[in-house]
Structure formats: structure tokens, C-alpha cells
Length: 46
Image (cartoon, rainbow, N blue to C red; front, side, top):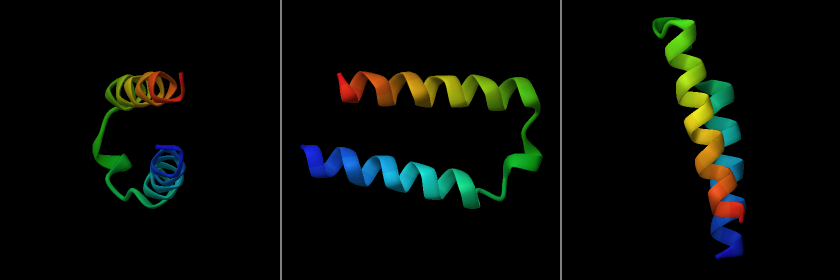
């Protein structure tokens, strides 16, 4: 489980860095999605 969490964390960071669709999403939607992703990550770490 720990290695899966590590993989998911690294994958998410790389995906967010190279995600080319950011310019297609308005700011509010982007913030909502990032907040949901952060909440999910925190629930996985708990």
C-alpha cells in the first residue's frame, strides 16, 4: 500500500506539471478540481 501511495503521489505531481489542458479550464473549475484531488490525497494518507 505504501508503494502505491508513493507512486500515486509522484504520478499526480508529474501529471499536473505536464497537463496541457490547464488553459482550457476556467480558474474556478481548476481550483475545485485541485481541492478535490488534495482532499482525496489526504484521505489516502490518513
